[in-house]
Amino acid sequence: MTFRASGVIAQDAYANLRRQVANSRFYLTNQKAVLQQPTSDAVVALAVIQHFSQVIPLMQGWAATPGIVQYAKDQVNDQAYDVVAEFNAMMTAMQNTLASLIAMFPKDGGGFLLYQKLNANGSFTNRTFTAAQLAPVVTLIDAVIATIS
Image 1: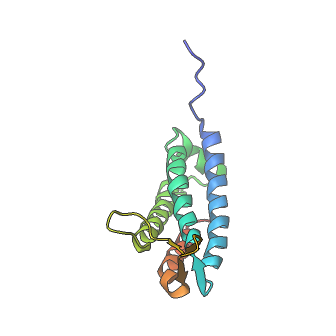
Image 2: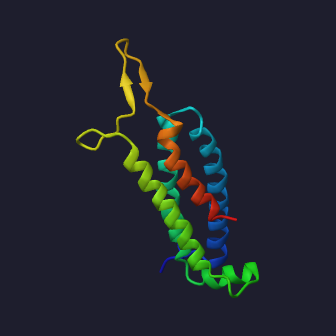
């Protein structure tokens, strides 16, 4: 027999989830400001893509912890609070933003990203996006931020 250390309890899962959601809101608020500049380096958009691709599965895993729904309701002292609906709305907003960023990013015929140019001297220049190009993504980031209080 082995020591069972892999099970996450509702208290820990809820704490991890709340911490990650708060961190994501802070991160997205800062990245949104960068994406609204007249031009924005492609690596910023890539960083937001990576953020979502990492935190969405983490948060979904914590949200699936047995007992977390009731624990969350107890913590906010509101048994009528529909924590599942609010979580799902946040996840949908995050997934929509991720999908939009992935779709807008230029790719070659094989799906490889086109984000750097190789200059004649061997240096690289990153692609940039204009604020107008990123405006739809910024609107979606606002929607994510709005789902978090």
